[in-house]
Length: 521
Image 1 (cartoon, rainbow, N blue to C red):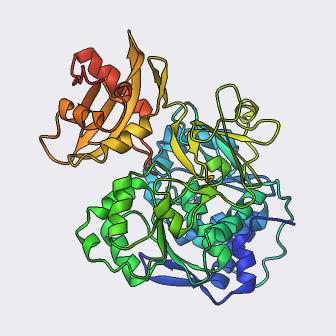
Image 2: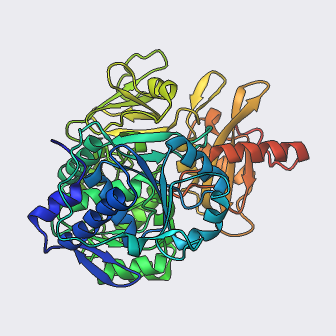
Image 3: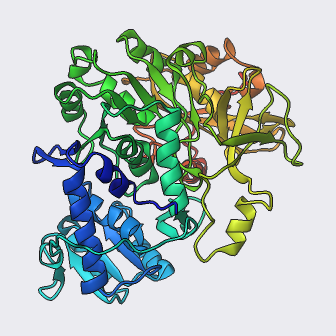
């Protein structure tokens, strides 16, 4: 029976192998030790909290060993874990608590203020403090978890039983709880390990938040499946990461474009020893070519990946040779993964043309919690998941992301893809970051507006940027306005929140503070 207890399965095979290095304390845990901790947590859920298969428990915590205890306890108990975003307000968390119907919440003492506010909004059977309880009667995790040599048998589960609920960011409305079944947890781990050719000697740091699918699915679960070692950071510190990658001799490193940019800008980047790194990988957002080239100059292979919470964070792969030959591509679909591109009418798009990316396979979720309408809109009757991302496929079967369908705009009857413009803007030596949105225009229907973060003040002028783009792309793609800004609003995984830029542009329009680049479009 396929289940998501990846840690337990690996611990049976190599219990003495080092599974985890926790950077803040320097502690090292074998697979056997980690598995025993998770088993004890599962016993506590069942015997102390009275949770049964299918019931939900929330987890609000930074990256720490106890996060893994609770996450992997779900694979042993059949209880559904609901990791919660650490940047959310009590109001946002309250929606997820109510929507999921969770009975208990395990929380990190660092979130005492938000938990105190949250408990005035929702009722739960149990509040469990990892440390620093908000109220003296809250259960204490160290007291709750009783070590036992015989945790009892794993609760039987079906491959389609829900392992965890991961809530989307909610940038287009209320967050949706994505139902990840045991089958999906296991398949993502095994297929990534095989298709990305991970090895048991691989060492991979995790510095992105564990509450997100990326922190768990790439590469924590795959590394555990193959029997490698995870180096867990409490958070993102560029200097610490450079130091640890060198001292722990990390071999495969995953990040998002924002992280790679920040690492490039650290003083340590020029001298850090990367000779032991087999390859770096980027995902979460389109990766500018200049970042790839900067790391390639250090002699490091730089691969790109692609995934979504709903389909698993690893859906494509490439070889080291392809990472150079097909620079900018996300690769070919993983084994046992079907990918297709369709136009607005649902017809298959020809090679080289842009279409919406559809994915099908055992790595796809079962839908959205308590939201049949959203599930039907995303998962069609044939099992294809409609990603909402636009992509091209070349004659060799390699895919390249063109942007989000909702980000595309139509100017003069022609489709314009902001990701293409953003990639070119980032090649300008005076541009540190950039994002493009479409706005209404009385003549052309829509035109582009670029938000640009300069590398230094004063930054390049609107006319300079328009001239730069004019040499690189068709005139209809060139933004009509360029707005200088200190920073772009981004999610924890580096995606620009375009809705915030749309709202910002509307406010600027009302005050007349925009910077036109007319005549160049």
